Length: 209
Ligand SMILES: O=C([C@H](O)CO)[C@H](O)[C@H](O)COP(=O)(O)O
Image (cartoon, rainbow, N blue to C red; front, side, top):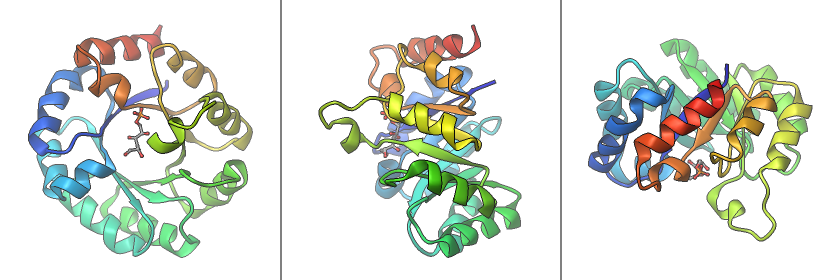
């Protein structure tokens, strides 16, 4: 079954906790977005894990270098999954994977900005990551003509475990599931909703019904 991941792209631990306390019952994975980690630091990871010990906590580090060191820091702070950039060198990805092995935790390779996502996804899948994230970031989503369909097509073709992030919404989440994604990531569709709990519940229901 496709898991639901909430991407918390807020800037303070207090705001993040206020959101996750509302939406946790409906999500499988809680992601601390890159801006949150940069703003609040590793202590935000520890705070979210302490508040939600039953959830998988995902630290969106988007590591570009020093793969072992950065992943080790986030796992030590309480993360269950961390991201490394798919555009990074293989040595960086392997370093993050080694840190995951040390802690018994998982690494996800984020394909944001990668031109040939299918080819790189297949290469990275051999490096020991749990899955790849087929991802169009906020800036790419803002470009005219952006469509999530390109992500779904690449995920289907790649034939490796994958998540999808890039403006997943209530009207697209079933297509994400039907494309075979292991995880659907929703940020703005939840944290910008007037009622985040209701939005998260609707997304979860759409995945399961
Ligand atoms: O990873 C993300 C982005 O790079 C900002 O940190 C987002 O969390 C990801 O794109 C999911 O958010 P939405 O696109 O708003 O669903």
